[in-house]
Length: 548
Image (cartoon, rainbow, N blue to C red; front, side):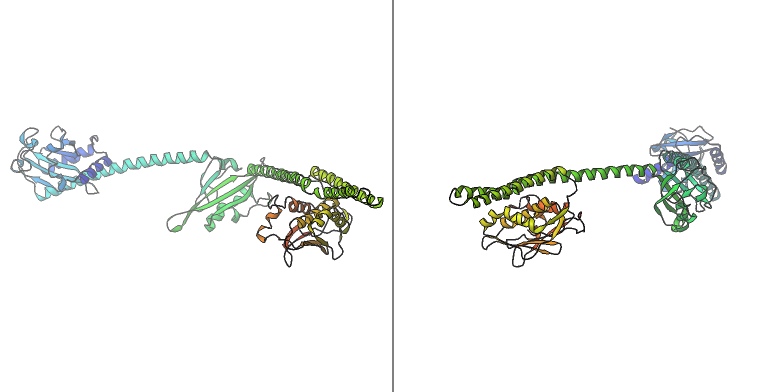
């Protein structure tokens, strides 16, 4: 017999739990009938594994186990056929067997019917024998074969009974396990038949509903029975909108359906429902499962989190703005105050050169100009300090004549303009706007100074300040800024030479609620355009466009 076949036969014996199985009255009766059919005094039900022969039930003698290689039944067991030996002493396969030679017995007549499992494996034999030679006719062989089938049927019945008992035990344990698991979670879970009657619901579902859940009630009136409302808490759910009913009627899943559950003496609960159909063969709906998540506390937590996030975002924005103000202020002190200081220094140099060569009128004029430059510088410093300290304080909006502001700026930058050989032209009138005069002056000063600083060495510097309604443009004929780098031009110190000029301009414009853009100047150069909202009245904000 092959190794695989022998292993599978041994597995069959294990599945039937036959080896060492206690004697049964039914088996003893069958073996007794087998001896009577064969007309012999002795018969045995033998089971064989890979190592031994186990005489499960015997008639006419005291059974005894033996090694498999000593068994007469094992000799032709692998053939799975009825064995008929009239005299074992005359059969070469049997004459030396210890059951024949007298070592274990004095068997002469021997016959056995194989016990074939439904899978076709031989588990043992129904064996009849005698100490005298004998012979069976065909009818006796047929009856013994039938009795062997009865024994196998008995084994099969016992196996099924054992499996059924085990299955019932397993199912009961699994149901208990499922119930325990479902009761341990805080999300309500329900399962229903196609008619809408509840098969299963957990602890959270029982706690969520008041009145108590009625498993025998159908879906009719379910919304009013369990007080199911729309999220507004006032509109009773229509029956067809109840997630369980909807899934059973349409077969389509329900995801994240929000509703409200009310109950006498209870706070309303906001619920998020998910429902899905259970399907059998062919996709037929065999029921539905529903989960209900109480999100009342979650929404409160989300509101708290959202409020905390909002406050954090405001604090971060304020911190970024404050840092930007400090950076703007530091840069302005080191960059934008140079112009009035240069004007003061220039006039003082003139006074030093003049000595007694000119009249007192010119000396007085230059002293006055120097004094005014110092005054403007002092005002600018005071305003910058106030601007940095004020942080988010509103812009002081008054009417500001742009022409007058520009004149002061050009006077402050006169030394730089002369040194650069530049010409600043104003071809038309400039508007009077509403805004903070110090910030607007700083804006114009930065834009003119940037145009002077970033001029081309191969041609005279030309700057034109013009207005188009509420817009103000400052156009130069310098090298310009490539389009790909214009967005970066508003970052602090992003471009050598720009310092804080354009970033400060952008900050001033944003504080007035406007925009600032960079464009090409026809013929080469850069035009900066500033636009701010325009409103009427003394509290209107600055509007206009400026060019760098």
